[in-house]
Image (cartoon, rainbow, N blue to C red):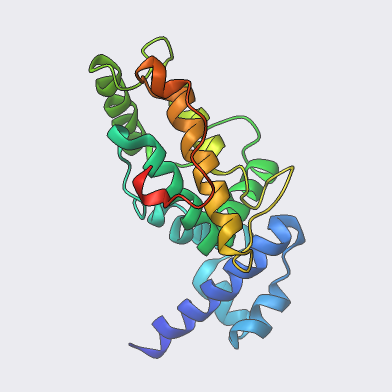
Length: 209
């Protein structure tokens, strides 16, 4: 790896943490420079401005990771649980999304470059609706929005409780079970007896949900 590439990576790593913690307005170039070991002129030469640096961080950390958890329209509960674990392992991701929503894009689409990716998800949801596996009386975009909102219930922008890596495994298991049950019963078409069943005991392995 060249020295220039290594320096860029150090700057991006420091900037990711800085923006995730302080947002765009609150981020300080001096702190990024100090954390990365790069010089301020070098940072500006590579990234132009603080705003351009945020855009680079967002692309590298959010857009580039959009497929990290493959979407499975045929298994919405399983997908939701996998996203819970992904958000847990990478708290910076939804923090960056939240800051962009608050400071840059208050009421429009956030993920430039992923339009076709998201459109494919909606087509997959519509296909599952035609096959009777997802409630057909919901618009695909509403299924997708409700699903993503549910998966981020305990993520960094939560208004109730934030999941942390050091929470006990019993707590994580309880949340995964509750999430899978809510998605299954709220979005998926089920036989009536199954839909009316209670969530499984807290000790149930979420892999079998």
